[in-house]
Every structure is written in structure tokens, then in C-alpha cells.
Image (cartoon, rainbow, N blue to C red):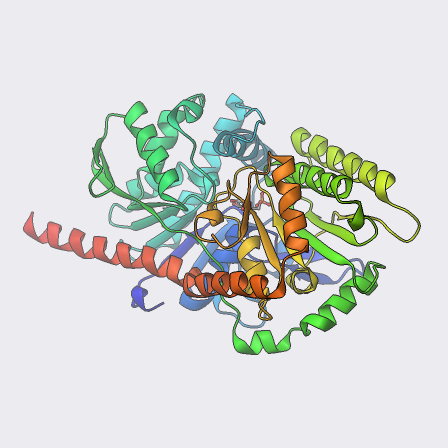
Length: 489
Ligand code: G6P
């Protein structure tokens, strides 16, 4: 990343890009977590090096770090340093499961799950934000490092870092949606959260719409000066640029594509593995097992398709990969049970010997397995009820160098704004989604090619380096401006 020119880069996120775990035979295995954040930020870190600070969550994580809790990653490549910070079970419960995932996650997604706000979670959230902020400050080799703060786990950290390192360039990226002021206003600590975030030099969201919601929220709850023209907010000493940076994926290199099984090969392998007929029309969904992803809605649509178009019974199969996530939380347990029940119902209703319409694979799949499924599929279904961006939709088109396959995409995912050649659906509308499945299953190859080629051109160009590059270019401008201002003052 040429924009960096020797500046020190420190990334902070809750989720680590590599997790070390004990495999079944006791040996240590490395896992890449299912996380849009990791998918996007990891290639950027590989390109610019520096240090990534994250919670060490794997049961073998402590066994591979040095005396300073560091490990060089990616394993064997050693492009950058992963510095692990250890949280106690209580800290993790209050800060991560509690405030971040029972409070902020439903608050920002507005997916009809009630946020829970506990005083004790808030205390843990503040304390953990401070611990990570201290780690950033300890890491800084100069008074003005570039700090890339990731996501809703760290709303307070920007102001905490700013207090100790007033000249740092703090780029905060909020990977999830930002709701309107009425919705956000129910958070008891709304002011503290906004103030914390406004410690950032640049605050990024996926879409203009989320930026607008954020600016309106600040306008409602803080005494701040807002310059709509420049999309800046001045609060106390700090000025923050609020900008949309649509996140993306790393476009696969030619050598990577060459290493993939051919599409006919992937189609054969996957259909054989799942015990499907060679000519089965295959739809796939790849998600974390999360209630925001619209998995129930897409199952309803599959059921409706089979009801409406009996010709698909026996010929259409839907495979849902659902990577376990936050499973200790009640809402997640309930949701996962509901998905299992609905799957069972559809399979009982339409299945018959040798035919199971829905396959629910509730396990972590590595990137190789995901890629194979995406290449084997006739369509990929993304029906999030609300999603900051959704990178699976982009991974699907990146996987299809054969320019075949149809993307069905929720209008409530940030990706719908860029990926307009997908079949865009309202997942709450079962009939419309079922019709989209039928349309995808019957779409002529030429139309698939036209749509897919265009989607691929968009994602290839607006890849993750473009995302990071734009943010860093803006940061560079601000650093220059700050230096000039300092000289003039
Ligand atoms: C979303 C969040 C990320 C998070 C990911 C996985 O994409 O925006 O911050 O890492 O989900 O969730 P988890 O709770 O497993 O980190």
C-alpha cells in the first residue's frame, strides 16, 4: 500500500485473523474465522505489514506466541505481527457477548431482536476498550501512527487513543449498519458511544445512508458542529470526516484461480459428496448462523418454490452452510433451533427416498470448501434482513470465472447498492423471493453470463485494496492538512 510510505500501521479488532486451536489428534491447527471483517482487512495487512491487535480466542493461541504475546502471520509467510490480548471469561462475557452482541449488534441491525443493555456489560465494554487502547499506545513507535480501528466492539477506543496520542491518525471503520437516531436513541449510553467514536480522524461506513444516519444521530444527541458540505463533524477539539467506503474482497490472483478445481469438477465433487443427482439444480447459502442473515426467510422461500412449482421437487436442492457463532447467547440458540425445525419440516414435506431438498451444514467450512460450493452452485442466496455490506455475495462472483451462476441478493445488504445485476429481493416477501429462485433456476446461460460478467467487473475493480486505498488517501490528506495547520498556528 503505497499510501503508507513507512508510517506505522496498527489494526485493532476483536476477532483475530488466525486462530490456533487443538485439532482432534491434539496437534495445533490454524483456522481462519468466518468474519467479513477478517476477509477484508487481512489482505490489506498482508500488503502493508504492521501490527494487528486482537483478542486471543483460540484454545492453543497462548502456545504459539512469543514472550510479548506476538506471533508472525500468516503462518509460514510472516507478513505482519499478530499481537494477542487475553481477556478473562468475565471480560469476554460482558464486553463481547453482552454489550457488543446483545446490545450494539441488534441495536444497529434493527432485525426485530430486542437489544439488551446491562450496566455490568457496559462497565466491561469500557474496561476492555481501555485495555485495547492501552495496547495501541504501548505499540506506538511515534506520536502519529496510523491506527485502524475495526467495528462496534471498539466505539470508545478512538477517543481513548486520541487522549494519549493526539497526533495519531485514527481510522475507524464500522462494519455493521448505523440505524436512524430514534432507533439508536434507546441506548442508555448513546452520548458516550458517539463521543468515543468522534475521537476518530475518519469514521467510515459502508454506505452514504449509514453516514447520514450517523450524522443525524450526532446532531440529535451531541452539541457538535456539522458541516454537511464536507461531511465533517467538529466536536470539542476534534474534527472527524464521516465518509462511505464500501468494503470488498481481495480479487483472486490468476495463480489462485488456476489452482481451483474446474467448475464441472467442482459440480461433480459437491453433488457426489452430498449424494445428489448429477443434474440437480443447486442453490447455496453461506453465512454465520446469525439471525440477521435471513436464513428462515430463505427457507420459507425454498418451501414456497416447491409448493408453487412442483416440477422442482426432486430436482432442486438448497444447501445452507451456517458457521456456528455466538452460540452461548439465548437469541442465537433459539434462532438456530428454529432454523433446524423449519429445515426438518421442509424435508419431511417434500423429501422422499434419495431426495432431501434442504441440507443444513451447521459447521465451519474453510475457504477451500466454501469456494468449491460456490463454484458448484447454480445460484447463491443472500437474504440478510440487514447487513452492512455482505461479502459472500462478492466472494460468489469472484469464484465464478465461468461467468455462470445467479446471485439472489437482499435489498437490505449494503452490497445491493453496487451489485445491481443480481436478482434483488425483499427477503420479508416470501412470494417475491420464491419467484426469484424460480427465475434463477430457469435463467438462460446468456443472461447469466451478461449479469455475472458485469458483477465481476464491478467487484474486480472495487476490490478491498480500493477500499483501503481510498481511506488511506483521505487520511494522507488529513495528515498533510494537520501538519500545515500546525505550522500556521
Ligand atoms: C461481523 C462483524 C465482525 C465480526 C464477524 C464475526 O462481520 O462485523 O466484527 O468479526 O461478524 O463475528 P464474531 O462475533 O465471530 O467475531
